[in-house]
Image (cartoon, rainbow, N blue to C red; front, side, top):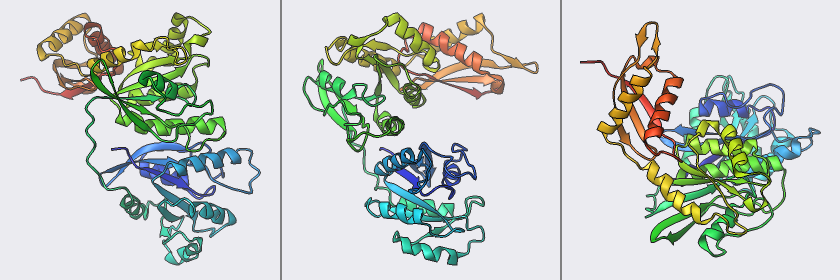
Length: 435
């Protein structure tokens, strides 16, 4: 199931970022008394009472502000709200209703989405301070104190009550493939080429795709599903930073649905931080993937030169496979589905316990595990409990003395012996005393 999205909105300096940090359990948003610190939207996975969702923090909206970033902040907020299932509107109980609160409320009343009105900074929990906020016309105001963590649970109870009832997931008989990447890298054009027909709208305007679209097709007598990810909810030009920030949020849902992810790069542009960030989400989601460098017909360097830059930028996922294609001319497209099958096969590969422990034995003979304070992390044996991605559990004595360098060494030895190209692998170290 795709996770519901909850957007936190409100004017500047009402405590949205503090509230966001309390919910996701990590200090992700910058918290400062200076208004307008949060400009870009931030998002994180959260869970309440067993229900997963994505929480989105937004910048403070001040319609009459002279802040040069205010237009950009407004666009960010609107994009976050348009993609949300539930909106949390935070106001300041100490200050009371301001013109900016009324302006934001006016926008929210038009959204036709559930809105939870939250009155923050009520450290004494004086409920009478919430009464005036009924005038915003957004239902019952809920009192909270973020600094004292009061009332947050009640707010989350109400938020999750608006989530759609869980339905059985549709069983799709075939590999699910999503295409992710920055806006206008050619994702929809690639889908149309792969399908051999114009199934998805293609435009030079960034953000033409409105929603994720799942398209079934057959190739070489096999069933597949292509998932095209949205760029923007509205077909109009917005600030570039807003577009790129939004593309990540939209891509996260598609990544969760996928078996294989095609990470699309634009050969005509430099590899940007946003490209790397999207690849990072795929890596963290432990999905097998292919790097697709589109528009290679307009190349400005050799494949070796581009691959070298990729290795530098994507050093955290050295296992990547790269294909150079052109959706415009069809160059290299025949290799995509072959490699989709290959990386999915690699992600589904299971090594027998005997072979796995032979690889482990050879690795330890060449380089022994680390020690700390005279106590060595002795690896006793290994098993592979699951696939997609391949997961390996190493039972050790003194597992706390394992370090990142040796983990990387073991991963590299596994990859040398077995083809895991295009897929991350997971290594887990557990304690087990020798008998």
